Amino acid sequence: MAAIDYIISEKSDVFMPSHGRNMGHAIQGHWLYAGHKKYITPTRRLMLPYFLNSSLPEAVFNNIIKELHGESLGQRELRAIKAGRDVTKYVQ
Image (cartoon, rainbow, N blue to C red; front, side, top):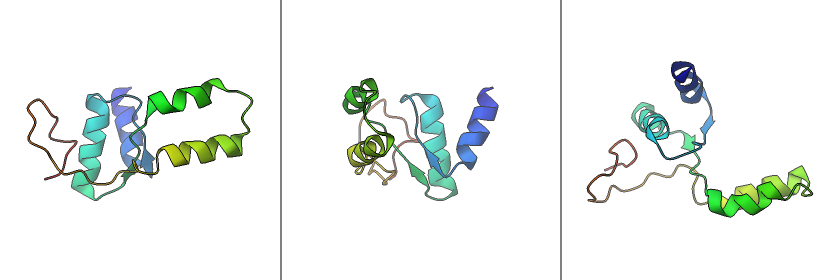
């Protein structure tokens, strides 16, 4: 199942990891190596109130999520010198 998930994620137009673990970092690293594609780094803490509010229309919800993630749409990040950071997530 993980292999199928990886293949589908790698072939997609946009990738949004559900958590910051190895799978998300591997896909981001693969995309950076193969050519820069968009991935969204979710801000789950800011999104939670909107997920809990079921009365929001879908169009309004979509606009809110786009605004929350306007700065996190896969821009390249400069690699900082920090021990323990995953090398597939940052670009030199």
